[in-house]
Image (cartoon, rainbow, N blue to C red; front, side, top):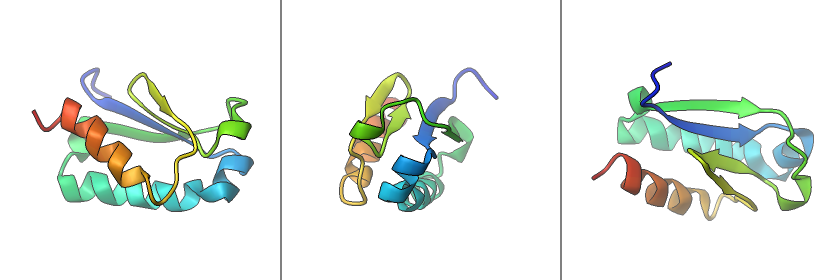
Amino acid sequence: MSANKTKIRICMGSSCYTRGNDKILEIARDFIEKQGISDQVDFRGHLCKGQCNKGPNLSIGDTEYHEVSESNIRLILNEAFEKICFR
């Protein structure tokens, strides 16, 4: 893994997963592919970090996002990668 890659971590703990991170995972994968940035991203799942009450949870770089949903994930990704990749 390159140190220059942007890290995306998505919680795959049972609470976040059942609240929609399974669908959010697919939307994020599709976004990365369609933007042609897979070589710039290290996208991985992780187990629960104990923030279940704020979930579904996702982090991009050092920024954590909570209450991620199918309706806001594209906005989160667009805003995050506009700053990082699309300068």
